[in-house]
Image 1 (cartoon, one colour):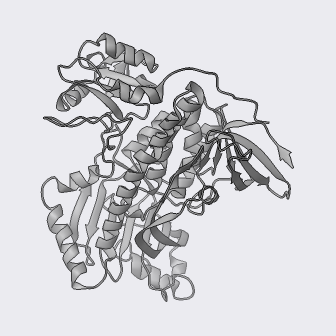
Image 2 (cartoon, helix red, strand yellow):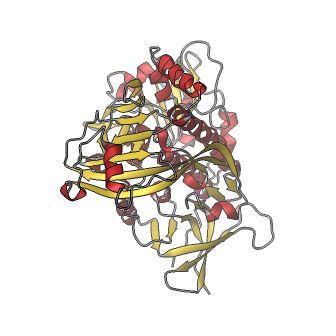
Image 3 (cartoon, rainbow, N blue to C red):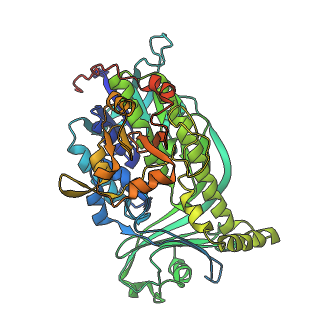
Length: 537
């Protein structure tokens, strides 16, 4: 039995969520080790879509330009009937609120390699491949201290000998079958959707009839999904009957029939050397939510905490949002002595959003597949009618990232006029900085920020200084007035932005100061201390 020195954070699972968590912690100077039972990236595509908020998170860890080179912006989502007539369309902009295309298609193995390359460049992170975690244990000394070290036991490739690593915090990014979830006694809440679908990934140079967006076929007998993923990459998803197979002697004929609305294939598979099926996989789409996401210093992220059907493309997005929400809080607790209660806000903020996104995905799924009764036909008709109302489709698109509800880190005020900004994301326009045109977050850095449209008061400056930031007057950013207009719509003279760019507090127009500092200051106090970081070897 071997043991290693204590590590600030151990992350279980080196998928996109686990590696992103390590990169975000590294931005704050927190060391981590990622334990992954596989040696290399899983080679088959799975997730294929992210939104502009996720592109902004990729920017925060410095890989957005590399990702842009491998991503393909998409125009949105169309719901079609069984004859492929459009029921409604959810358009997506090429320049969203976060400064990136609202929908981007990509190949997951390429994203994972990009993230791992970035990980290898950060001295704060280590990836231990071939390390299978076998247990996560808290309170081994019987002290009942929720902040005490957590023991992670693992076994390396080809070895029967177990090793231990001790961590100040453990992030369970180990997927739907999470060992971490079992270790903290979490149970699934069933949100009532479970269907088996066949996913088909294809590479072809043949002409494919596509509008450069995703299509959902709303048909109870043969629902399906189609999307263009890359220059020559496409994905189809179909719900097939139990006795329908795409393998064997009749498999090609069935596949040819399924994809006929989009691409013409020859009757003989030997004549289709320009149509390569990269992968066929049977998936069970489920809607589930963990009943709790934390015990002590052990946390659940991504599929370990929530499972959503893929119909609105938010599965991976939700996990990366988890990492973005949690890591800055954990860094502040570990490095700056912030109150342990700060970590309670992770589940409080993320769980309602995860539940909401799952419900939206389930609603779209039922619109596609919700039975053959008259009620199902009526539901589909209602969807089409409602979505033709001006502004409804844009509102549904925005609703995938609703504002955080009021809490210790979101100071919501009664809305008199204008838009409530607290709990929403600050937009990210292009700005001028040191003579260069850059995105706003490149100026703000990785900590708190105060944006003001008026001369900063002594209190604004004091708040910014206490949180390691400087107040920035929006007129000095050269953004063509975008941020000033955003503040005016929210009837605010200034905003306090969290490190994840959520508006935490506002200065209402004409009032001069932040008025709720007493509510959040105890969670964020900056009694700085040096983190206990010892060599990981």
